[in-house]
Amino acid sequence: KQEVTQIPAALSVPEGENLVLNCSFTDSAIYNLQWFRQDPGKGLTSLLLIQSSQREQTSGRLNASLDKSSGRSTLYIAASQPGDSATYLCAVFFGNEKLTFGTGTRLTIIP
Amino acid sequence: DAGVIQSPRHEVTEMGQEVTLRCKLISGHNSLFWYRQTMMRGLELLIYFNNNVPIDDSGMPEDRFSAKMPNASFSTLKIQPSEPRDSAVYFCASTERQGRNGGYTFGSGTRLTVV
Image: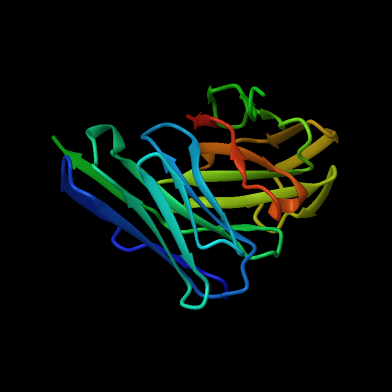
């Protein structure tokens, strides 16, 4: 069964710190992996998309990496800000026409 | 591009009433997905379409739920009759080439409350 896991479920860090969110998946035969952000009561905003042939993608203070062999992806957030507080979801496209979501990590940045 | 557009943003209805949720895809996208999100169950895929054709509706909870895609850019999700346990946020998402090329783009969702 193709599964996506995100640990921890919740994380609190002081403002200004760098942090890493983790995502693991059970099947290395993926097409791509996407990181989303969801604010309370809002929709999902796409942050970064990594194709299976790529090792990482960067956007501003965000950097996502992909290691297919180990079934892992990380989302690195540099110099965290209170505005980064949200739930971060990892989603994997295994090529079976469905996007499989992790359960998310709820991030709180403490001012 | 205005992105994936969902309407209404909020819907409050009485149990037993028919509810219709609407979604407009991004131009050029040919795959459409309906999700439901609750605190208890997270994001659940209800049904998805490729090129207007329903491919997998195994996530549709009951026969009370139905979805259509009358043309390449528009879809509806209908619940008839609605029940309180249908209360959730319903998202639609679209992508190109079944997600193999680009990623998924989500709409802002419809928050449904059935009382």
